[in-house]
Image 1 (cartoon, rainbow, N blue to C red):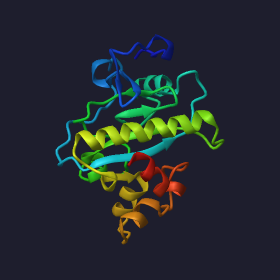
Image 2 (tube, one colour; image 1 turned 60 degrees about the vertical axis):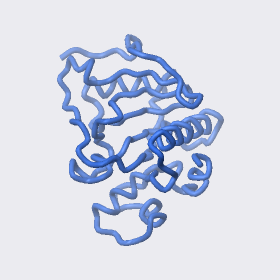
Image 3 (tube, rainbow, N blue to C red; image 1 turned 90 degrees about the vertical axis):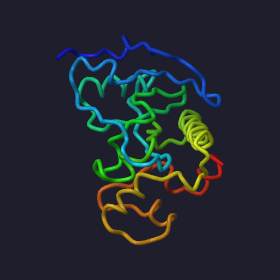
Image 4 (cartoon, one colour; image 1 turned 90 degrees about the horizontal axis):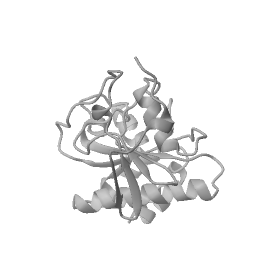
Length: 198
């Protein structure tokens, strides 16, 4: 098992989607450490799920989290790590993700494209740019799939469904669970984020 240095990661492809630089570095193509990876999605595509991940305190947190995943230090598997600089794409859009806590049969992991928006509690320019990039990427994915912001969910939504919580879309998206409240830095302004994406 070899340690993957973040500084050695070079995107296989680099392109721009809706003004955001995407660094495509698919885990399946670089899996020398044989970490477990999700299979292809078997559910119909449901939409986009939004998460927050705290900054790793590096120059490029998306690159840092990609390396940490390949080193086996991150249990989740997300499609995109979104930062103020752009995004690192780790999974094909047609793959399942492991971010929603609803197993391989739930619509979160098996029906959505996941965006981990890396931002912290300060709410400064870096955090706001990461949020903006996340909104632009979510908007692009929804648009090309002929979907709307009503097809965008929080991590909370799928945890609440898993836990048997009853309620409308907004309640399921914004109600904290006993173990998590995600996306922590966005959920308090979920309607504002929806408008930003719209």
